[in-house]
Length: 480
Image 1: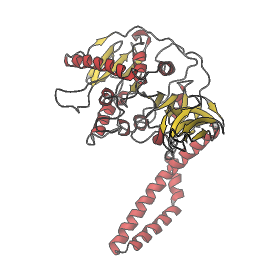
Image 2: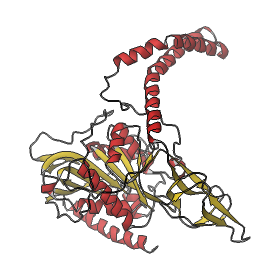
Image 3: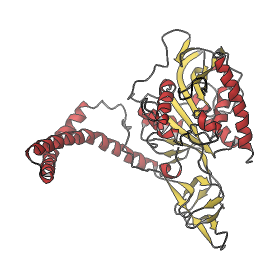
Image 4: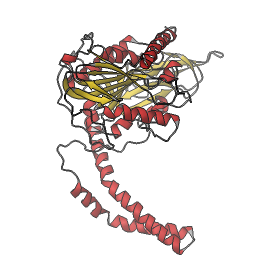
């Protein structure tokens, strides 16, 4: 199995050479959508979701010109066409550009724009095949809206079979990017503004990292109503709640008003057809629920949702051997695996400390003390957690004007005291006294914020809840 990555990379590199030569021959031309090849579907339909309030300027995905689905990368995409365009961040030496293929399928009927991205980390292969299968299964006369697929976002890392950019930076820590920032920030800025700004929904496909594998699952900020409803469209794909780390593509998209999820499936440097098929089925279900295709997905078990998770760790160095499989349900006290010192033969076990499900795990390997071996999703009362999120959201929203007012009052008092005295204690005391006075007036600010708030249309949260740092330890042990 380990020979697969290099063989696959060679095949794709040869494909890239044809892509590059195609670009230089001005090959960006439309063609009709290919015949459908995948037919596994699912059940009920969901009403189209209301969009979140956009926080940054977004590009319109519906041009006013009849017959044109959208304009992207300087090209008009005609309805009923399939186009292969190319995005480049302009980072290469002149004449040695590294274009990234962007596949665009536009249906004959108007509708939303769904974006699919993969290989933001260059060693993640399952998403590449997933996007290929989805894009080349679409039929123009049966598609409403547009699907934009970018199978390999991080072409620099992909050609080196590396997770990172050439400067060892993780591209998925720099979105939405900065036009005047580091190389990674500039690449992120270009991709976000030239591609992601056109999306109505985004599915960013990843795998486990660093010799770990993941159960096919979504990483979703369930405190956002639009994201929560988007996650339900995947039907039977397990969901793990979390806002996502700062700089990740999905968090930047959500902050820009684009409902987005990360779809995790399998392990890096391998092509795993089971995980690919699950991912394709999930995306097809989404397209059905978004009313982009009519095909009904196959009925599946109820979707599992985890609001909390934890990592179980090795307590000694040695050879880690798992006795548990990915996806298994475990109970507190169960032995999941062993770690054995190859020199002394001293062995220890890793036990589950909670009831839950194995949603991620390390592959058998040499480990050190503290190594994260098993990622366990912890079952929780969904109604209670949802109520807590609503409460957190209301508190965060209500306290925002109070906090801003206190900052302003404290700054003015500190500046005034600093002009009269050089004693830091005097300045500090003045600021504290001003804050105390501002607290007395906080009830008026809260009333004003309520009076100016938009009228509620439902009992569901209207703003993102405050997300505790390191909510699911995902940034520590499984970075997206």
